Length: 229
Image (tube, rainbow, N blue to C red; front, side):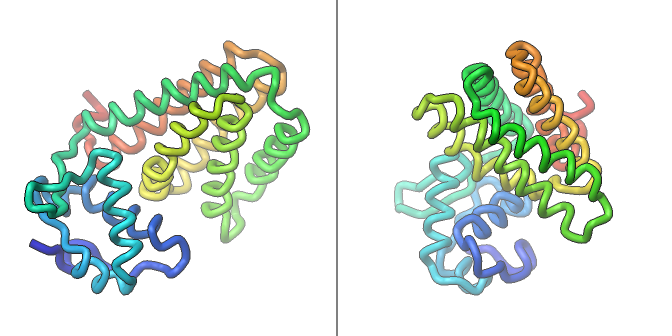
């Protein structure tokens, strides 16, 4: 069956259509509004979101690659069971990949790029009252993780991190309240300072702690019992 506007509401913005559809569907899966086993109609979704079928098809394909949607024997898209264990597994993979990246990047990351990013983080820390602060914080998060992944010098590692970034970016959007974003900013600064000082161990530990904290934020939002267990 298709989904209704009561389950996923509001038309999405025209920019980054695939990403926007991906995020909206992910929110539905995480919250349980899209139930395990529910079939998704590309035609119905396109109509509800006010877009063509192409971005809907692309978003469903991405979610299929991420293991959140499956194709049935009759070639229909169906929501896969998703729970707190899935969130923990996703963040476990993220930790493996991004700790490896920061380890490789330490000592070889471009100092000018590092200083520029650290300066942006410090300026953002002093601009908490700005109206667009949350969007700037989310933009900085993207630049931060992209810089470290690229600086790792490992093309395949960078590719795998990028494969998870769309999914994780949606998580960031979902849990992007001011307190969580402020915490994430402080965590970014700890990693940046460790990289600036050339302390590989401290950078790796700070990255691991950062990812654990972001995992706990997602669990607290959607699976509070698992977060406190």
